[in-house]
Image 1 (cartoon, rainbow, N blue to C red):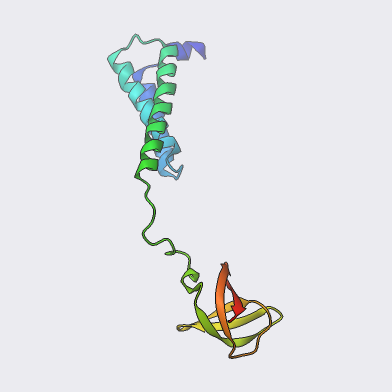
Image 2: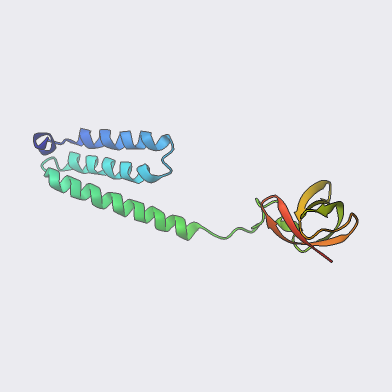
Length: 148
């Protein structure tokens, strides 16, 4: 094994980088991308400096892997900005604070309200049909209501 490491060529690094990039395509979520880029960079470096000892090749590979990953992580964090539509994928959150009339009585803690053209399951204290309720919260698809 040591004999193989002592005779690493740039082709070995380029092949390793290519394998990592191919694995990234199958859904590693960006983790292998920067390691693959670092391996390819070491391959180019080994091509330019063929007498570079194998231990230094691994040191450069480790440093480049960490540096490229940290660079990308910082860039992603600085590019992230808050959404201008925070409730976009939280259907029902726009109903919190609004008042509705019960479509089905709340019996045993569960009932229904009509909001627009939709019926929503609600939880709260038992109330009769036609009672006015205010939506005070949301638990998944259930709206928490209280009597007005």
